[in-house]
Image (cartoon, rainbow, N blue to C red; front, side):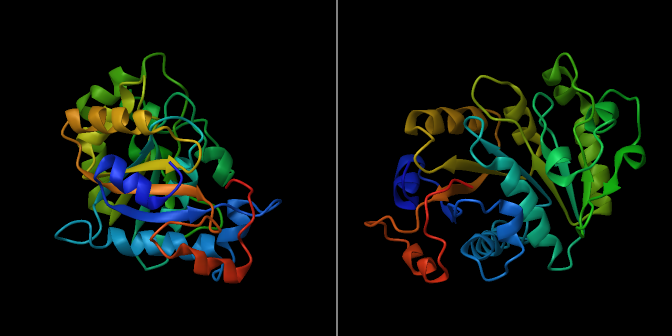
Length: 256
């Protein structure tokens, strides 16, 4: 995948946005603090698209996943949680990657307890829910890694937990694991109201994306669309008009 157009043609799903590559030495955290950067603008655009994703606006629970690892799903989950919270919505970000969690590192919070404790019946939501430092949203980290994540995710505690969180928050953003080779993401897609599939430009293979879409759809997951990360703003030949972002000087080739 190299462009939003190629992504849309490959899967037949709407592309909700294209997130640009960042310059050398610029982290996603640094880019998001500059409200005029193409990175920040792109995620605001995705937030706007999600507001039209259902007949009642934002989905009450949103799963972020990708075909494989290292495609930008955790960064996307954090940025969407931040952007949606900036509109005044009550947002909780849940790390549901029970194999290789990363949100506790991205947000600099403890992972001593979290989702796995709740799903195992060893903790209540109030025990693991915390404010994200420096943010206006709440977070539930993954917690200790269980020996068999699908067993926890397939139980009825996950659905009950999401119901309880929806009573307290306007939207639950779920950072899920990759799809291919694992049972976890399809189980999460089954209980989430909507799923957003992430692809990394120049990295994600077409066949991997199609395989991921088939697996997510097999559990009756509701696919809201796709998102292209690490998009080259200077690439010619796409029909999405992202080249105008080069005005801000973010057209270099470092991956986000």
